[in-house]
Length: 285
Length: 325
Image (spheres, rainbow over the protein chains, first blue to last red):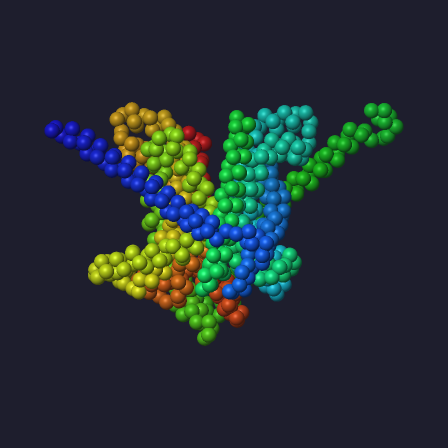
């Protein structure tokens, strides 16, 4: 065999090994993730029951559901989205329409990107010091504020990106007709990118509906029925955390049921937002 | 237009003035929204500095390297949580970086076209699964698995070796730094893989095609064309994953074992900054205890801030490169 052939053979072997390793890596990655998903589905489905949505969280040893936790989570997440969406869309509008290339815009975009992946436990501590420490008690309102701060950067980022995707000819045409800029932004650009921005809101909702750490320091938990935002409030993630860490089998089962519902919700929200995004992209060419 | 004569002010002009005022107001409004994002970051930094003030002034720099963590004697030092955070994150990255790289290469160069989108979207979806799910899976499924199969094997085979043996000696209960690091690694894989895949697919196909046309193998294209082109963004993606790993709370709190002991062994229970805060926050009975926990949070924020800032700068450099070519 000539030296050239040997070199070719060696290159081919290295290539085959690399391809095989990469395929293995993909399989390993998928293997873990399917294992985790499968555990959640099988354990969750086996303990699913109607009472989950009609009964309150039980004391150890008796039967119950997660009704108050679901209601608390919906209340706090809803409020967080209500706070975060207008702020986020406003900030996104500023970044995309007024400060696309300016120094201030770049700085805020940078800060927003950092907040986007900042540890949520830190946001929880921050909100703890500005609300709970001041008011002297944990509250659903504090939980909603913490979740809003986590939702905010997601919405800012998507709004900014989606507005930047709107063709500049649309802006120019409207401005040339003498339409004032605030109307251009609110009535033309916002409408053109609405479905894209909606995906941002849905993604933010998916993100906050599973957040646990920040709620530990703000809303804490409440074993009773309560819709008072000024009191500690039950919520699915913290209930799951406390039940899973407890020694009671029955609480473990409830934790898995809650985990199942939460995962399903997050996956469906992710899927829906991706479908909307796909359609949005297709419509905008 | 009949009232042009009757009024002294042209209605069109006054409408123009109203619009201009609204324009200014609107600009001010959205600008304050954007500034608010900035304020949130500053607020987080300063409120935690303020909250941790008592601990910092009581213990000074010693807070960073004292391994005392004694709520009864009111002695607090951050060494054990810091050590645990660094070691679990290191294990996580050792696991996640090669696997994510493999996934990204598989999805951009090897997999048949029809398979790419489904797998990529599956991985993207999995990135959204709440971290508490990883933690629960870790506690109920993975910890028993480690305790039964992996830990005993490690301490039997690696524990007897000199030097590195100390890392693998221990009680083999499944809880511990190694388990925490692995769960963390699994959690980080989708994030890093998504960034890598995205930047790999942004490499101009002309570059890759020229290399293929010269007779390069797939691996040579990846190693000599794709990787050099995307180096800064790949580093950015890895740092992004590291930022996640450092600050992750729920995935590790379940499996670390919450022990304030400095142990060489990866099989022994340990702690991390985030897990310490999550576990002990509601138990903090003195203001110094609480302040020490917030001080830990402050340290965590500073470290992740630096890591994430590096990540973003690296990713941005790649985006600039893309615009210029």
